[in-house]
Image (cartoon, rainbow, N blue to C red; front, side, top):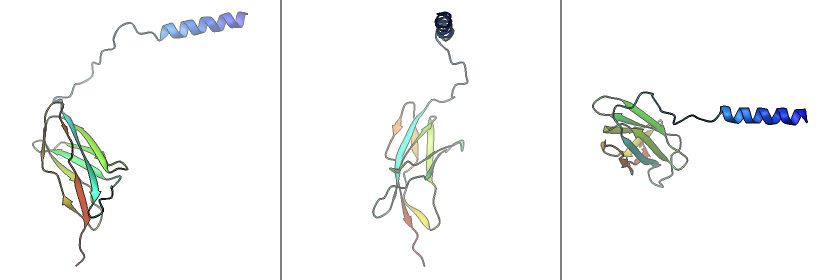
Length: 126
């Protein structure tokens, strides 16, 4: 009986200690420029196979700030970025070349800029 009462008291004290006393306010630093998301795919030329594990980099044209993501098993990527104009680059392996690359993209607040796709081919030997 004493053990049951002791456990009950511990449970009550434990749960009341975890109860908040109002909203939690994030006082950390805020991003200077709230932005949006750049998304697309990386595929092989010809058959269009998805290329997993490729690093895609969004480079802010005026500042040079870099934001990166890796492609998933479906070749897709998403990068959250502040407002600005971005040039996109993709990681290449030996013997590869970019055959299709998205143009620079302008991101404003809450923008979702999809279909920023890359196609990668193999350089001809010669």
